[in-house]
Length: 301
Image (cartoon, rainbow, N blue to C red; front, side, top):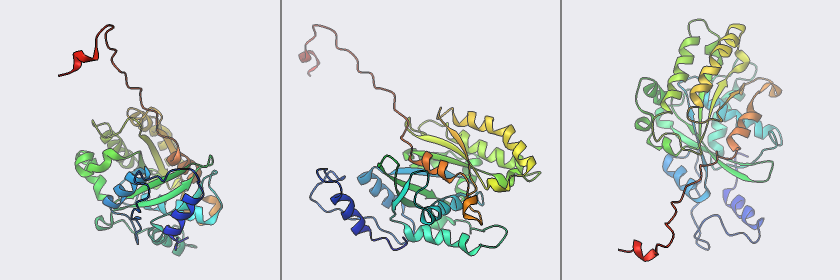
């Protein structure tokens, strides 16, 4: 999968859909494919989003909370089994980027816990994943992989749209809560406070679109101790209440993406299902009625 031929993939998909117009409005004009060695830049992601209607996913969390691991091991799970909750991998324009990130977990096999190097600000980017849902619909996902420092500034009070102006274009917001930190005395309240502040940042005007979805994603849930589970039970309702102020359908997803035994990776099925779920329906736009007997000529200049 690391050597996916994007041109062949694109051609095959178009020939498998006879009678349908190409996704691009400029039929007959060949458009350049966005193919990169690692992660896409935001500009490349925008180009793909414009042509394909790709879904932008913003993973929010500070350093070492498990954002990169969650993305990398979703890719790894797709490679290891044929489908995930009925969803199947259909390609990627960032296969090498996924492989580089998943490589760290493979190296850690046999160790107590896999270690991922922190994403550096110069490596900020977006990873593309093409998924076919159980109903056959194809979903283009653009998963952010950003340095935790971005969200430290947001936690300290910087408006999210000042730190990441493109966040207003996001279709999914995933606020990460580290179960390992939740299980450590003295760190539990800190972890919850950081997640709470990121959720509060989503309530600013213009951040969350009407159709966007929000999830609180618990990472490293296999490391949750008894005290950590109690802390989660205590704080989860509050965090979901904050999330549902912007998305009434917000959920909490518990994941254990990095596990030494394949079957122990938990929550990835629910995670991919949420990512590929339809957007929230927009409220219908009311059209003012024209008073009876009035001519359209009355509205001309």
